Structure formats: C-alpha cells, structure tokens
Length: 140
Image (cartoon, rainbow, N blue to C red; front, side):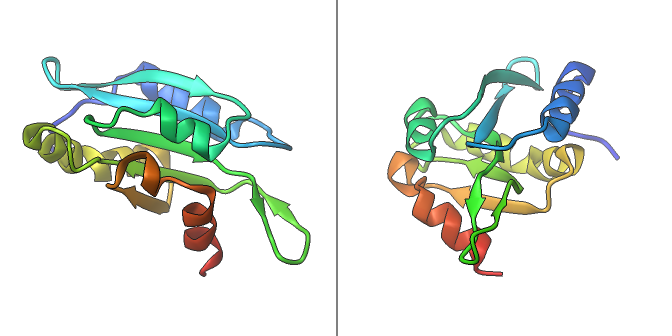
C-alpha cells in the first residue's frame, strides 16, 4: 500500500518508546507534524506532566498536528488510568492543502502509533480542554 506521507524509523522508535513509558501521574504528550516539502513526519516536541490547557497553548492555531497523549484519567470510583489517545489537531484556520495532507496520513499514523481512540479538535485551544477529553473517554 502506498503512503502519501512517510513515517521515518526514528519516529516509529519514538512512538514505541513513548507508548511503553511507565507513568503514574500527570499527562504526557508527543507532538508530530508533517513536513510538507519532504512528505514525512517529524517530531515537534515531547512534554511530560503537562496539563491539557498548557498543551492547547503549545499547539499552533493554524497548522495541523498529531498529538499522542498519555492521559491521566480519574474514574468516578477513584481509580486512575493512563489511556493512550490520539488527538487529531486540525484547526479550521489551517491551510487547506495541509489539512488534506494531514487527513490523508491520519489512518497510517494511527495504525503505526497503535492507538484506537481518536479525539478530533478543530476549534483550536478552546476545543482542547480536560472536560472535552474526559467526556470523550468516559462516555464508553
């Protein structure tokens, strides 16, 4: 199967390392972007123990990103879990060509990252809140 955007081995290694990191508090995020000129994915930054609101402020308001999030989820019965979630950050203010490229590579990235839960965020920082993520993750 041919891919529009290549995922270099270094990104695959980073995804695997991030996925299997042991966490017992806070949320961590790995931000990936597409280099349009080279048609490959690149790591932007990793954050440890970052709040969702801080993460929302770090993401660009006019450029799509894939955010792999290890999220500290507090359940109503007092349990704590750390689900791995893919945030598809695609603000409506992004260039249409980048949004199209980003959308075309999403499934390949999701499969490579081995994540089943995707949360779409199109509203920019206002759309990425702890309440939004809790609602999406606790609804099932």
